[in-house]
Image: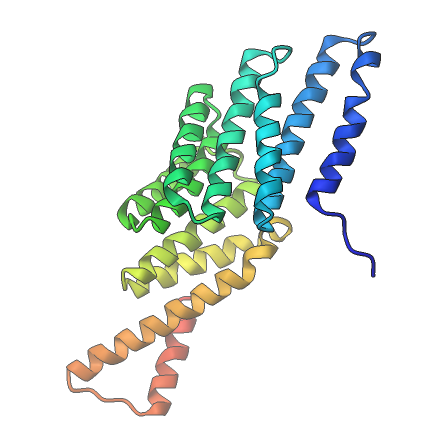
Length: 262
């Protein structure tokens, strides 16, 4: 089996192709030139993020710097410059989070949030809010993380997070509920975590083309929540002088699973 090309090599091929176009484009409408430069910047961002996912940090940083340079081209209109700069900032945020530099990640995430807010680009603002919540959790600021996650859900309910029929948005909400469940687990709020993780699982089934990569995380979190709930109930019963055998404990776990899977 041949090895799949690296993100950096795919980027180099696309970049080489697009860089052969400008001479010919002088004979074409300016709109096409604008579109191609924007596409080149977005491609650099996408491949930079992919490199960061694979922990190829040197290549990822080089691609993000290239995207940052392309995003400020004078032949792009001001709104496109600002929009691309917001995408670059969000990608830098992910890059630094992957490098366990949460403080730097938060700084770039907040830049992206402010930029998307100025542009009134609410779907991307909601995504950045979700990203910010993850960073805040890494920093141990769990109440703020939950507040950001609640903000995402509030935007979706208002209809400002994009179309509710959009599979990508459904996946975003599923991830949001999963992350809420994770925060609730850390706080020992097992019943709430069960409800949140079940919401994540239900929504994920409606957008498998996007959510498939996270399903095993959702299932694992739900099982942890159920186990925590069953253990918590057993402890409460023991404190009240009601002791259960192994068979009763297993029945209690199954019962809690049924209650939280409907």
